Length: 137
Image (cartoon, rainbow, N blue to C red):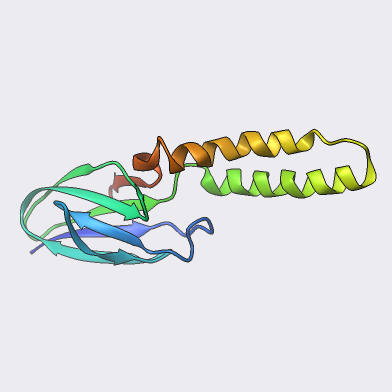
């Protein structure tokens, strides 16, 4: 039997939400944060997509052969955890600096960091999730 295995990265951006997994346009299940799941399928070429709310990954084409498992990794947008941490840090820094000094311009840095998530939630919504094939050894 042919199998497509999905490994979801562990991240705090989308920790509470499951990703919906689609194979050839049909939802075959969901995958939780940090989870690994196997989805049995037929032999041949398949299109795999991951979705969360109105955002998704780009479609990836995989060729599955009999008695083998094709492994894919799925996660949030690249560098999402780093950007969220920096944004939160700048947000806190803004309130600390504005409380003790007359300096109100750090909020513009936070606004700039919010442009990237805004892009992924609007124009780049089909690139919000990453889905890539990985080679198991």
